[in-house]
Length: 361
Image (cartoon, rainbow, N blue to C red; front, side, top):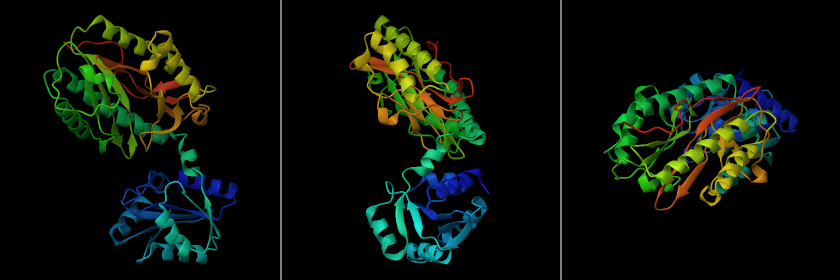
């Protein structure tokens, strides 16, 4: 039985729940379902009790579910999924059933409530809590995705000057896929010149010129797990002010990486970067959080920000990005990002592209 499933079943016992349902019909794709079962199809439901597990799907995915989810009994549902879930609960005496209240649409829940004779109880992000600390296998997948993405970008960088941002983004995706990525981790961000002031600059028709900074935020995906990395690079000699901004961001990132260790909190990481940038006089130009976890989702806990509700103690096995930036409207900006995994004595960098100031020849 998969370790994730075992841990979830143990958590159900601790929550005094007989079971839980994790839904991912086509309109509600769920990384939690993949995490617990390994299933990669587009429509399925998990019913998990304290000592058994079922994956409920339709005709299209019966063989796939059997192959990808060997710890689950595969059940083909009828016209009304709720009836199938209800039959499982009645047959196996599941009376208190957890569900993802923040994800299940009201209409879907109403249909379940009409057909499944149980007492419903919100899971309150129970699966997400289990996902925060990554297993060595999960870390290996993120590391592989980061290596593929990083090698692809470094191969492409010498060719970017004089080309459209959209063409660079397309070539980067092709390079990642050729190296074995199953997809992009997220849509690539490219902001060249004055567009570097846009933290989430979607690639445009703009031609990347010489003598400017270009920010590229990119990642690949391997076996469902994503990587996340940002590089800002000069395409030639740049103005003194824009180089100064880069240097501040680079020093701030090093401070944040140093702060990412067991015993610290995600807020400590944010503070290390934010305080450095504020002391340099650019606090108002850094308006987003410093980082986030990475895994099956590109943004996961822990989140590095000043929001006390997001503050988490850092533990070995957690991933976290460190991505400070400075953005000046009309001039441009700089952001540097690495994905780290917390270790027993500090952290390990999973992303591979060097972050020191570089000028393309």
